[in-house]
Amino acid sequence: MTTAKDLFILAMERQVNQSVGQGDLSLALAGAELIDLIGAHTVTLEGDRIVPEPQQSPSADDPFLGEAAESLARHVPYERVEEWLWRRGSDLAGNYQAALEKEGQLAPRRGGLSPFGAARLELVDSPARRHALSRWEAAEPVLVALASVVGIEGEPSEDEPRLDDDAVTTVLAVVNDAVMELEAVRQRRSIENSAFANLWRGP
Image (cartoon, rainbow, N blue to C red; front, side):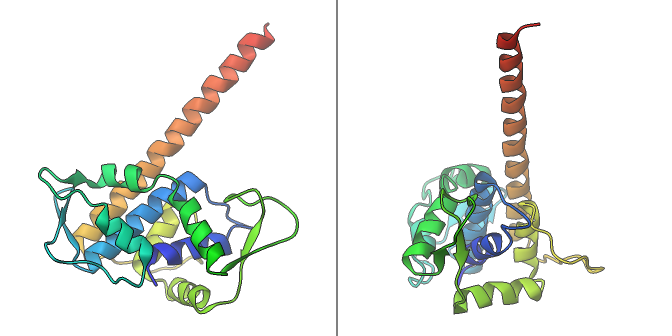
């Protein structure tokens, strides 16, 4: 299991009460993949640049992480974390949904619409779901931080999640900035659309 898959499962689990925007989730999933690549020593960060480690690759058990590693920029000046998030994150939530549907971990549910597609889907009971929820219940710091960025909040706790890895902290900060930037774009478009509608409506 990867942090990205756990995050997607958590978003699906909480979709009834805490709907997550697909764009926000896609950016966070790209960040989660990068964090897992850092943890697997497939990449390091030099400032905000992603530097691939030679002859290092993540476990072949996860096709998404393998795909992410294959898509790394391998020449100086390398890719910035922000650039990676926007490029890798393009429709990433939809890709994860399709993969989990194919694996039989998501099943159609009667009634309503899903934020991830036309038909509402729900998680089936599986080892993957139990693993993700176990990490969430244990307040695993990286998963909690990523979930918080996309608006998934857990039970209030007196203890703040501690992140002792500077590279991981950098990625999380850039993910947060990217999600805020996406929200700013949404708000600007909403204002522009409202102004355009009022123009046609007239005084």
